Image (cartoon, rainbow, N blue to C red; front, side, top):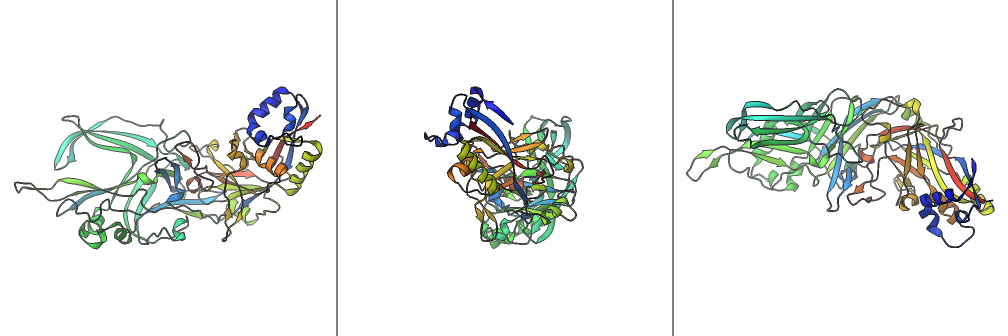
Length: 534
């Protein structure tokens, strides 16, 4: 694939790769890319090199505590955090089930419930979706169902029953898996104290004891908004923001919370989280779908009445609410379970070789496998020889990975192009065998796109132009590359939080890619475009 590089091509390549080419712009005639500055004096070539690409077994475990469930970090220190619920089974990756564990706190220490004889009327847990963004869709906003308002004549408002108008708008959540059908969501008390300083309580395969079932509800895959307006004066009685609401056991909260008024269990947060250790939210099913919710926007609201004595001695029993704190101050853990028996990924991981590469590559979020890629030393030696002898200037380098179309499954809400990836250079292994990395690739640091997606034929081009240039030109270390499902956590100012912080802990996606199969024309390869003098 040789063609003459004319002025237009030179200008185009300089515009695209200028920052990488000009990174070392001293007047050394042997510098890579120097030939692009010579008018009509270079020829361009693209050469393909085989790579060693292999599956990495993460033992179905990932750090999934609160610090790893963050999708966006704002400049004020707050964040958007994502949890996952549900279950999905398919033959390539087996069964994946997601539950969520969280602590809960009283909003006020030593709370007195506003007065004596507090009695719980009802308790409601609300799961909310995050707001949709340009990068992520959490509910399908253009599939709204709004049948119109309807009237109720005996809606309870305080001690009265009044006529109201109720308007409900419903949206389907974005699902991964079999998008139809319902799931049963369960809420249990947990009986294990969550100690964030204990490493076990940072991992997705954490085990916790469960106690009383506090409530169950059938989730039909939809979230809704509810607005209640009083008919008499059109005043707002209730507004329920977008979410899914389920009732919990009011008697449990009466006994375990309200009846503990004035006792040490409610004295402060430290006592309370050791007394009431938290909640586990899970589903019964194993083959439906996964969906995401806003972890820090969950609400647990207790409606109760109490005795209130007026100045004239009259006793009334007004209704009020207590909102428990389920937000960022609590420990959270995404708990993930897998059954890989008989799956394609199980066979691939059992036979994986980081020396020879694997025929198929399996990559999955939420603790599933990763992909490792090595550029053989022989390839680097060949490029160094080309650079030295032919004065070759590298103007582009990418790792092309084709999706294995023979091993796909229907997934209407999460289309193939929604997959996101990260790529990082691996520094080595830590004390416990985990891969370590400290920074982005030099291409990302130089401002290049991390990868480009092509729909037909379906493949991903991971940009490694400057990474390869540094290895060949400046003898930088030829490090293995780690590819994962997920994206780097962004800040609201547009930057990224750091190489270690990604959405992988709650990314529902997965993919099967073609690996180092030398009999396959679409095998993973390094594609190097370089220029040489005539």
